[in-house]
Length: 220
Image (spheres, one colour):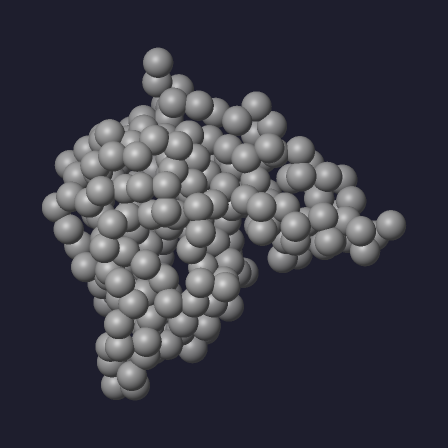
C-alpha cells in the first residue's frame, strides 16, 4: 500500500566509474562524480553495476550505495549561481522530484522498479563538488541550505529504468527527517536531545551513528 501523498518522480538515472576528466575550469580531476545518464541500470547491495567511487574512505559502501538528489535544488542552484548545471553535476545516481530533505525520514523505504532502497543518512558534501562545477562556494552553500541530497542502502536488488515510478513503501516511525539530522550534525552539535533523537533511528548508517555517538560522548 502506498504511503505517500505527493507524486514522487524519477527524472534521471546516472552511473559512472572513476575517471580523469577536465572540470569546468579545465583542470584534470580523477573522481567518480562524473556520471552518464542511462536508460536502465542494475542495482546491487554494493551499488549500481558500472558505478563506483574513487575515495572509498569517505564515499560508497553498503550504507551509501545510492545517492539521491532533488531536481528542485538544481533549479535553485542555477538561479543562484547564474549558470547551467548538467544532470548529475554533484554525482547523484537518482535525480528525483518531490523528495526533498525536509519531507524524507532516515529509514524510509522506497520501491523503484524492481528495487527497494532505504534512506540511511544525509550526504556530507566534499570539495570535489566545487572542483567538478568550478563553483567555489557550492559545497559551503549546500551545507548552509541543507540541500545536500541523501544516501541509501539497498534492501532489494534489481533493475531500475528511468521510466520507473517511485513509491514509498515504509515510513520510519521515529520520523527523523534528513533536514533535522543535518541541522543537528552541522549546526546544533550541543543538542543532546537532538543527537539522541537521531541515534534512535535503527536504520542510521553505521558511519553516521559513529559520528553522532562521538558528538554525544563529548557532551558527557
